[in-house]
Length: 260
Image 1: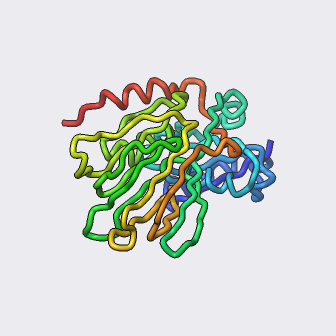
Image 2: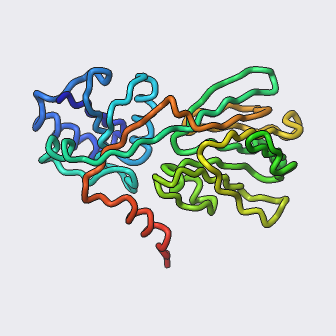
C-alpha cells in the first residue's frame, strides 16, 4: 500500500502528526500523490476539501482517509498514530459527486468550477442581488432579492449552508439544499430541497448595476451573468471512515445541538 500524507495546515499538531506517521510508516509513504493507493490528509475540514479538489485534478478516484488535526473535523476520523494500515483496510467508504458550476460573466466569458461543499452567489456591492431561479427549465421564482444564494451538497450542508440557517442533510439523502442569504423579497422564503439530479439555472437580473460573484468552494468568478449548476456524475470522490465513526448519528446529533 502506498500512502500519500497531506499536511496542508501549518499548525503544530498537523506537522507533528506528519512527522510521526512518516516515521512509523516510512516504507509505505510516497511523495507522489498520483502513485498513492490512499491519501491521508492531516488537518481540518478545510484541509480535506483542499485534498478532494486535488483528487479531481488528478483525474482518478484515489480514496481519502482524513485524520483530524484541525478544529471541527466533521468529515474526518479521529487521529491516532498507530494502527493506520488496519484502519484503512477496514474502513467504510462513502462516494461523493461534486456540483459542476458553469458560470457566464457579463463580459461573455465562460468558466467551469466544481463545488464539493457548495456553489454560492454573493452580492458584490451595497445593493442587494436580484436572482431568477429556474429548475429543470421551469421558472420557480422570477425574482429573489437577497444578499446571496447557496446551493449545497449533503457534504457541505453543515458548513456555510448551516450558517445561513439551511438544513443539515444526511450524506445518502440524494438531495441538494437551496438556501437564501438574508432574503429581502420574498421575505418569508426559507429555501428549498431539490433532487440531486435537477438542472439549476440562476440568472442575475441587471448584473451590471447589481454585480454578483459566483463561488464554488475555493473558486470565485466575479461579475456573473448566469450560473448553471448540476451534479457531476462523471466525477466520483471516495471518503474512508472508521466503522465506529457513525456519520448518520453525528448528523442527527448536530441537528439537536443547543448552545447556551
